Length: 309
Ligand code: GRG
View 1: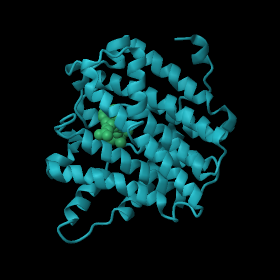
View 2: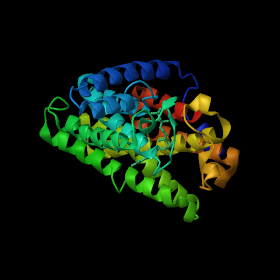
View 3: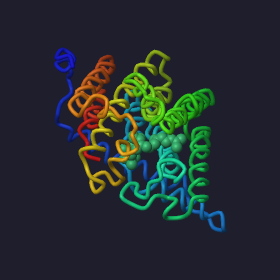
View 4: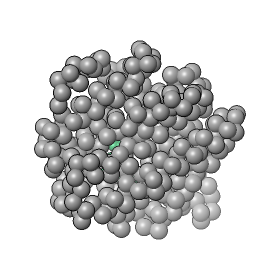
């Protein structure tokens, strides 16, 4: 790790302001999701119940925070940015529901509770994931998200690209094949950028799109999100080794047991932590043009590597 990179950071270690805002945005996101995913009667209500189980009550809501805090840089009304935040969280929750299925990671525990297929059944979990995925785009396409149809179309295109085969789904495909691929460091970075980084980056990009920012500004926030997303994933690999299921609310130690390359297996614990710190500094450097207005985003980058769950 370069000392210059570490010294270059202007991030304060005091995350109190960030943590308070994370809690406030999480509460507002929960309310938005609760309204958008209203229960329905009739037999089809089972899938809505499963969607609510997957999306409400739990999770750090880091992606909603990033969407809202990025939009705040441009004075976007919260009524709009919270809808974008809810859409990103719906995609994230769908990905967790499908990732937990027996055909993928086969997990029984998520956010400290039984996974959706354990609580309901596999078919219901597949449908709940499908419906969260599609509902996310319905939310973005609604004029309540932004009065300008061109902005709404851009939001839809951004989230679709980040979620699909060239983004998160592509990353998940590589991950499922990873044990047989002998990935090198760059291969592992590419996998994690796609699987985890794309959705984190698009949350930031969507804030700038809502603010009707020029493409250079959208890209700058996306670069922040990409670097902090990779640091977040490295921290996840470290937590997978250093923490317990009681702390994280999900199974730990599974990647190593499956023989998958992780940042810890390739770089060692200290090497992985150092790389996460370098990426955090790099993420913060992208925020320089925004000055003090971006302090919460700086603290979010630090939180991504300091968290215990
Ligand atoms: C099934 C298409 C498809 C994709 C799955 C996101 C994902 C791709 C799988 C999740 C597996 C995993 C544990 C990835 C590591 C990083 C990560 C995304 C962790 C979960 O995100 P957090 O920590 O979770 O933000 P909460 O519960 O806080 O929202």
